[in-house]
Amino acid sequence: MPSANHLDGRSSSPLKNARILLIKPSSLGDIVHAFPVVSAIKTQWPGSHITWVVKRQWADLVERAEGIDRIWPIDMTVKSWIREGQALRAQRFDLAIDLQGLLRSAILAWLSGAPTRIGFANGREGSPWFYTQRVPVPNLDIHAVDRYLAVAAALGVSLPDKPRFGFRLLEKDLATVRELCRRRGFSLDKPWVAMNIGARWPTKRWPLASFAAVVDRLHEIHRDPVVMIGGAEERAFTNKLRALTDRPFIDLSGDIPLGYLPALLSKATAMITNDSGPMHLAAALGIPVVAIFGPTSAARTGPYGDGHQVLTSRISCSPCFSRVCRHNPELECLHLTKPTQVVDVIRPLLAAHIPCR
Image (cartoon, rainbow, N blue to C red; front, top):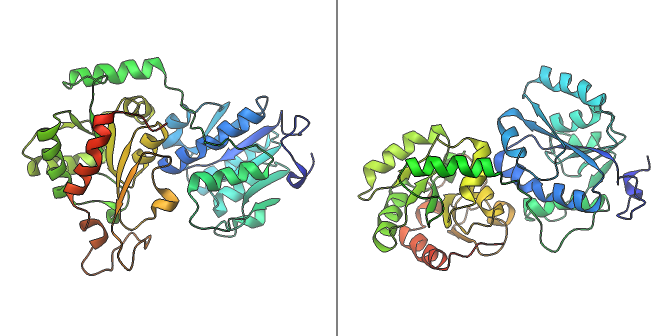
């Protein structure tokens, strides 16, 4: 097979029927950001076969991605990594794409035996040493979606004017969440607002009291149901939130399996959220997002696309990309964003009820 340096997007490309290994094990938002890569490759080379290596906990989401021919769930242990690498080698891949950019993912690409292995030139932990082609990233503030698509472009893929997030919104998924919502007292098909108060980093979490003020105000001016989403670990926070609110909200935390989350969010009118995986999922589905950012950069990982609103406060240390705040006063970058600002920017989104597509 020719070097990837000589590949182009013409029908004669050796990749038009290639067996492609895509390595993007985690996490939720990063996986969503990789969907347009799959869409672009399949549009250019519909005869290609794509296998996606993903952490087992995220496999149900990748099952809802258009264009994936096989999902390869893995566990994040060294023993499992070596075992899976040996199994992948038997698949005789032509190309391995490492979008994770870490030592472990690069080694897995190498273990797969794919003769062409592509990844980022600025990959961490020495990962570039395992690639046969390295894609430069000259601008660190490029959005993750565009950074991933740069890899596809380096392979000769013609990129669309607007990246496509291809979701398979299964009717059975919609029927399941529709019935669950009916039992919880609201209609999935009438206006409702999704709210995500969680985030993996404590430094990304807007104060619960601020979320509570937004819940109360939205109930007064719109009365559309406000629905909390998130994993079971968020229930402790939603319980605290309930003690802070005067108005009701619906708590679906822990009730929606990951695979059904795209179906649920695809029906939301808008979403209010911290910088989080569900934020990226909602944006990819075309749902207008109002996001509160603190220590992270909206330029790199904000809700992708037009029509979204990011609220952030410009202080000297932001974005610091830190999971521990060392600023005084603590988390000022988040606390400076007020509930009234969130309500002001979401009101026109709720009135318009226009998807961001």
